[in-house]
Image (cartoon, rainbow, N blue to C red; front, side):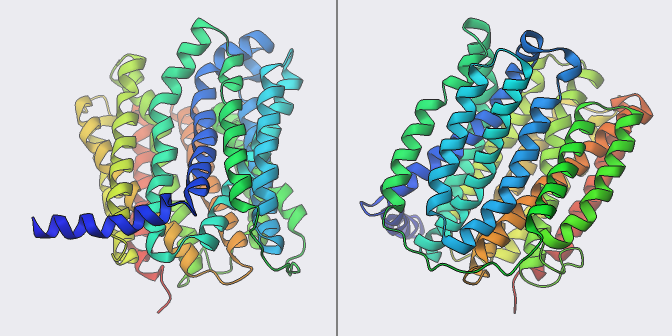
Amino acid sequence: MHEMSDQGEAAKPERGELFGPHRRNTTIGVLLLISMVAFESMGVGTAMPVLVAELGSVSMYAWPFVAFMAAAVFATVLGGRWCDRAGPRNPLLLAPMLFTAGLVVAATASGMPQLLVGRVLQGLGAGCVTVAIYVLVGLIYPEQVRPAMFGLMSSAWVLPSLIGPPISGLVTERFSWRWVFLGLVPVALLALALVTRAVRGLVVPQRESTRRGVVVAALGAAAGVAALTYASENPSVTSAVIAVVALAMLVPAMRWLLPAGVFLARRGIPTVVACRGLCAALFFTANSYLPLIMTSTHHWSLAAAGLPLVVGSLGWSAAAAWQGRHPTLHRPTLLRIGFCLLTGGVLALQLVASTWGVPWLVLPVWAFAGFGMGLVFPSVAFLLLRQSGAGELGYHTSAAQMSDQLGSATMVGLGGALLALLHSPAHAMPVLLAVLALLGAIGILIAGRSLNP
């Protein structure tokens, strides 16, 4: 009882820092912005078959995803540099405006070209606002309450994954796919109003950029990730070739966009950025293919096949909330524990993915992995902010986001290539899971290098 009382008392200052009069608008505005982007990301996929059938053809199915991803990558890079030069105020004002404009353009589209313009605007807004939010947190929230803030931010991303697809499907069936976009406009405007008040007085010294060739590198990265996204949405031998070419394009771009030493796991920021890419590759790739495994290999209904994603999201949210209540925990240790849980979850999926597998095991296994993700993701964000100097936070945040996008796109693309080559999820998915488990083992090994001595 005494220990529980102490924890309750310790939580009160954190709640005051997050929701007290001086930061309430900021906290709520940030959470609304994240929820807006997350809901759009999770919900649009549900409406896409109907949307594409009305505006184009099945052959165009991947392009709305490709347009969004390419724009998001480009905006992530430039948004990070903008935040480092002038602070997050202007990016936080412009990005929601772009996103809102993209929602309206997409909702009123009469053909595929207009829809793609809307998706580009949404991607620009989403990529820029994600980086600016992390820079804002680093500037105005004390270090001891950042774990709690990252826990809230994780929940703001995770919860839309629970309600986004079913709400989007219901709205599309009962009304129109256009309301999937229009319904988010009031949320975007409210978030913009709250954030405007929060950053009105924010002053950050102007700095000159010391990195050249950023625009070219950003364009190369955007093209490479977009090509990987296209390949993952259209599994075929041709797409496998496209994926290889895309990776070749990404290599020189990564020299400019990632800190030196990421691929060697040098201590500090390079390892933190690498860990962000590894955890995203593990969790989001497996998440993408779990419904296919359950429907194709075990003949579950679409509704039942979504249950593993729900329990994974709940595990993530629960772990993120738990770590937020324990701000003094050693983050590299928490990072290693999280990778152990993630890797164990991916390995255990081998007992599900084959035709001889036990399908119901997917529920406890993926809740287990989700809990690991809820430890890893906030710890990466905390370590990134803690070790970034003045004028570096935007660059490091955009690098972590790029690592996330590249890791996910590469592994999802690999899954598509395996499906094209092996022709069966029951044959392709065990191979993919083995590769993911190897990445998880790397995460376990390098987690202790995430903090400079």
